[in-house]
Image (cartoon, rainbow, N blue to C red; front, side, top):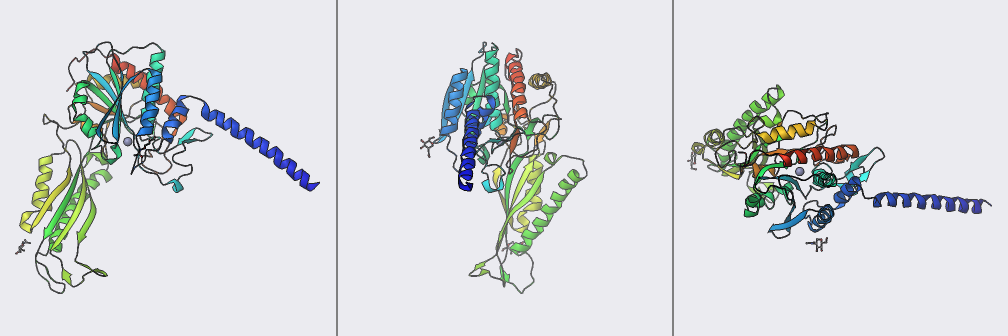
Length: 442
Ligand SMILES: *[C@@H]1O[C@H](CO)[C@@H](O)[C@H](O)[C@H]1NC(C)=O
Ligand SMILES: *[C@@H]1O[C@H](CO)[C@@H](O)[C@H](O)[C@H]1NC(C)=O
Ligand SMILES: [Zn+2]
């Protein structure tokens, strides 16, 4: 009796279970903006070896369904750029571009509450996935917005391009950097570009008009080697340590401004030590009774667009790595702070830039509010486009969302994602209808 009761219970349970999993499968098969977002998120394009074939074929399918023309350009084998286009009615006007990147940073699965490549959606609507915020959200929102505009019969005056680029998370050198320098890019005749931004914990959307520029600096000291027991002047270590102290003092002056509330983190020059290299190796570590003849240190500097690059380099040459202390320096990376016409690489956010007002009005028309425009702490692909003199705003419409870029448990709420589509409908229709400025806004 007991055994048959148990079997009967198991039987009932298995029916309930299979019904449940069926309904779950049906849910997954639905084709909605949210499920399309989930599908795109599930295509794993994490570094170190993202395969770009699958995301591009997914996007090409979407483009075909929506009715956009497409082109794939490959500057580096295996690292394609996808360009989708909706032709405007006036081909003489500069076009507009909406950019996002195809790759994302890796995720440590075991530290996530839902697997990072499953795009699991919780009962309260949180979609957990690597790339949910950075930046597969905008990649799908652009398409969904265009799809809605098309179904409403909207037709753009200016041509609209959407680009999907590889390798942003590695610095964009094999992606946007090559694209921005190409004749294909020039032929697009771009007047204005939108690229990724960041989430905002408050009610307002964040928007970025510039970025800090990285300088990766290596300073090196040389000096007379000597016995570890002897006190003498000008050893390599001593000369390097003098510089390390000076650099730490400079770091403090900048950080004090932030701590005192006088400047935002992105408004100062940050300089952080990233490695030290010195000593004479031995079989079990380092030779301890010898002062080495060489020593070096690496620093990651980030400069605000308004910073004076000449002044900074003078400081490095005269104080941080002076030749009179037998020091030298090199830059592993030295980003430009001025564009080809010598102006700071920033997009104007005033009367001189009509695109700014159109964008702002279009966001406000959806009930959205913009926070005070910011300079980004780190870098995105926008810098390559701004350096060409083309205005770019960084914007990912995610309000009331914690900033989880590159963090564990990155998520985006479904309603925030859907609101973003509405915002882009407004932004894309407004920007592509703009009649003025026949030449590029510079
Ligand atoms: C990338 O993925 C595609 C299928 O999506 C496969 O055909 C191709 O061989 C892969 N490329 C590499 C380099 O693994
Ligand atoms: C620079 O190096 C030379 C040769 O090793 C040495 O004689 C001199 O004292 C060093 N000067 C300083 C300031 O370190
Ligand atoms: Zn990003």
